[in-house]
Length: 99
Image (cartoon, rainbow, N blue to C red; front, side):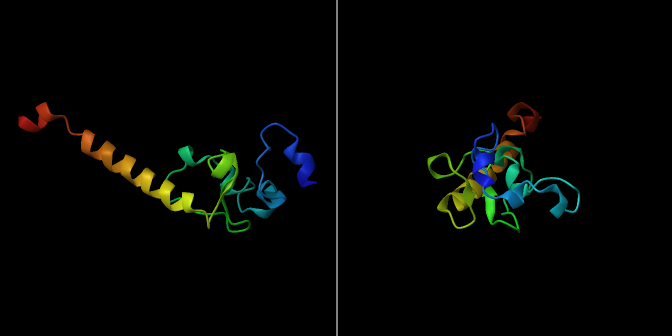
């Protein structure tokens, strides 16, 4: 069943059938690993049921899923925190600060 899903557009990097079963979640949605890393707010956490961090965006090694044991996970979390800090530093305009 998983191989047949891999042939469909949008499911080429699907980690598990459990990730798309809407009946197994509290809100009737798919797993958190189906949300791209760029669109997530807060911490980068793996799916509780599959251990996959992101299987939709292809951000993993060689375009595959990102698992919780990958070195990429720590790198992505640091990159996201650095970007957030940089935005906070740029939020104050120097002209406004001088006044």
